[in-house]
Length: 180
Image (cartoon, rainbow, N blue to C red):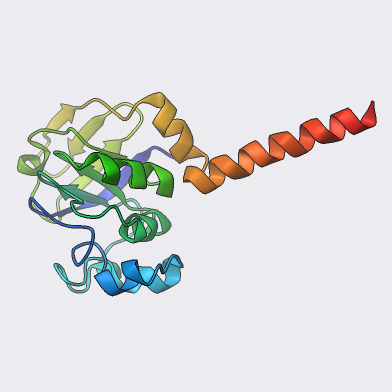
């Protein structure tokens, strides 16, 4: 997995909810998980046209209580599928779990990160080391990245990827046992 994202900063404020913030509630409650169906609706209630302007390598910059509300993963699924990362001041614990489960490159606990950027600034984030750079202004800060154990889950593709890896190991062990 490439842990370094370089693109444009998409700055959002505080208290952006998952439902009717990241993704319309109707898609979350409908349990839509197909990224192709989710992507066109990403942030449509708070930033219409986001999905057509954002590109792989871009990073969503959030403030406090980012990704609040019920931990519906649809917004994270869409962001991960687009190759967009997230950095924010903080997010609820259940949202953090949903982000890891979705395989999304993100960091939380980045105090003051929203103050580093204007919308559209060029950004580079190393999610493995925690280095955040505003390439437009030259500002750089180092934050604590997610724990290595969580990054390992993200690198395998989230919970589904981790399950596939485990199953492959089980199948290989069974094959070795049968060969004896």
